[in-house]
Amino acid sequence: MWPLYAAGFTTAFGAHGIAANLGGFSEDAVTSLLALGGLLALYDGAEVLLKPVFGSLADRIGGKPVLLGGLIAFAAASALYAVADSPGWLWAARLGQGAAASAFSPSASAMVARLNPAAKRGRAFGGYGFYKSIGYTLGPLLGGVLVWAGGLRPLFTAMAVCGAAVAVWAALAVPVVPPLPRKRQTLADLARRLADRSFLAPTAALAAATAALSVGVGFLPVSGAAAGLGTVATGAAVSVLAATAAIVQPKAGGALDAGRLTTRTGLLAGLLITAAGLAAAMLPGLVGVLSAAALIGIGTGLITPLGFAALAASTPAERIGQTMGSAELGRELGDAGGPLLVAGVATLSTLTFGYAGLALLLATGPLLALALRPRTTQASK
Image 1 (cartoon, rainbow, N blue to C red):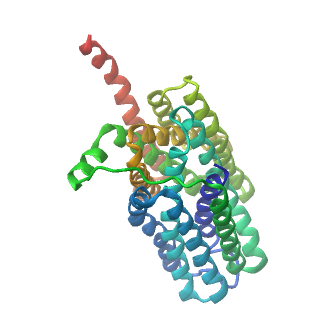
Image 2 (cartoon, rainbow, N blue to C red; image 1 turned 90 degrees about the vertical axis):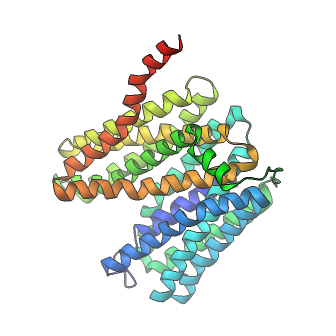
């Protein structure tokens, strides 16, 4: 499992480490806001398009070849810019990184499910999420240090070394998980499976958690700056969010495996806590920023391992890669949609109303589920 956890760290470290420092203070930094937005969208766009494709490929040929191929391609794409050091090659390298992450991220998730029995998947996905959260936390920090020391090239070199090292480790330590026999699946069969509640509910929760996480990382520093807080305080708030999510995920997964927590209860609680965190962001000053960071971290830390465990439990083993790739697509849409929603509302009014809008959206589903549950139970009696 450790190389799979390392793969999760690599995709998170690569995504946030470079994204947070492309426009940093270095000679080769991206100075055009249009170019910066394009480079950020290029990586995410590749993931949106390719994750379901590579997830299905992992089902067809096995997860390990796709995992290794993705890690090797990530290392090669990172080395491309480290060697070429040209603005044009930066675009190619970023596109290559996004395409490569689209391969090894869903295949790693699928192998976490295949290598663990159902009774241990909660803790396994909790551990996987923990190391991804560490990557999200350390990426901007370590990336900033490397860019400060020598620009973008040392950062891309570190990414290349990381991808290559994890590929070698996975090749030596991760067992081969052969593909399982599969029945022929039509597009209608796929549509029915992806439209089923057992897929939609966990995926929607994961998308909501990712939306809130992205909003917290992107907008809490803005709220802190508006309240007169310095960069150290706002940076600490973002670190609190990521660290809290990292700590909660293994505990939530362990509670699921031990039967102390059900998937439904955990997902509903996670959504409500996350919504409460967004509501807390409406409070002024350091109290609001830190409370929001902690609550969003707790909520997303609950949702992530339980959502993936629920998807693994409801999916035929021979289609697990396809499901994980499609769920990752949902998370990417949440990652983009959350900030767009908050920014759109904030443009028309204020950032406070932007937080309120997303909080209301996240709380609506759980509140409806809780309100309708007694009626459903009464009708069944």
